[in-house]
Image (tube, rainbow over all chains, first blue to last red; front, side, top):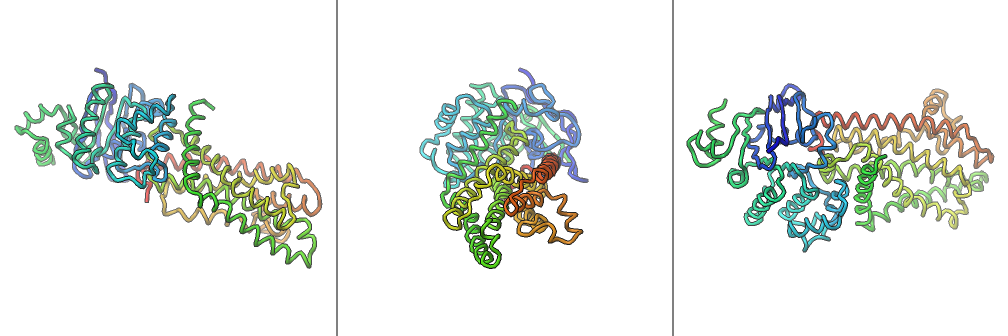
Length: 242
Length: 265
């Protein structure tokens, strides 16, 4: 198993506020890692830097072995994301959105890529409907379809099941596990849903006030904090770290 | 240009064409304003033509109105397409894809040209039966005037979109304000000599003033002034490059301040 993503002494300052402080993380290929932390812990800032949307103040990011801060474009082809902070164009239909993104990612057979995502995410019934006419749950599925259209080797997800009903959320989780198994993809998932993290992630990274305060496999963390749920680990870490 | 860049430019152009075709009222609206301008100024031209026949016989007023509108349309089309990305909170998705900022700029310029032509051609055609004025009679100079003004429109758009990406939708009104700032010194409806001397100095660094002086020379005196066109083109190139640099600096600043994820309403 190789390292897909590695950060070293990653820092992000917004004026006098240090949003991320000396972050050192590494993600192994074919793994699902949870990025946890309370509000303002620095998760979204970290994800933004890992996506190239935000420039770090200092430190390095290596993705697929290359310096991502200096040259992000070759890595971006093999990467994708979904986040509640962004939307797809609402006036475009599902098919149009997926077609545009398939083209943007330079896919050769656009029609079959769109068909595949349509099948996978059960979008057939509203493929030609505009996004603004869809429910929040349906939009989330379209957003995930966009995030997987280029079969990314590294997938960054921010609250992927936040607006989904329990049944669809369970289906998405199952899908992500299958996707990771079949494609050996690497997933970094920021979530507040501890149950989701327990189901999906082998490892977790816990952030607080911009710093990485705990990391490891879920099993090891249960052992370390003498508990049997991520919720308890989360509370323990948050109360023990000042 | 690499083939992959071309594909990404096509992808974005396709996105803007999808938006355009999604609404018939929108397509009609693109032609509506230039046509209304033409009708109003056409009658103004007829009215003044009774006392000053050269105004109506040369079609000067109608021609300058149409050509000036191509600057405004090209700028608004470029900027509105960019604003679409901000309104729909799509910038984050776009820039996580391997899209370069300059590829976005070329896509915006391409859709701007398409929308400008959709807007201007019907108005220019209507001027023939309604007012007996055909801007197409100008031939090659018309193309030269048109593209110069489209270029000016894009240069303004690059500054505006740079400000939008850096300061957000609060700066949206600049879209409508900026082109009119140069209108008085563009000498659209009056010759350069009408301006006081100090404003003539200002007009000398505004490319549009050369375009309209050139149009007047052609339509009123039948004189083709290539020197004026070259001056306009040179200034346009300078402003276009400055606009490009301004957008790229703003984009870089937006990445530094984390604004690409917060660009929605």
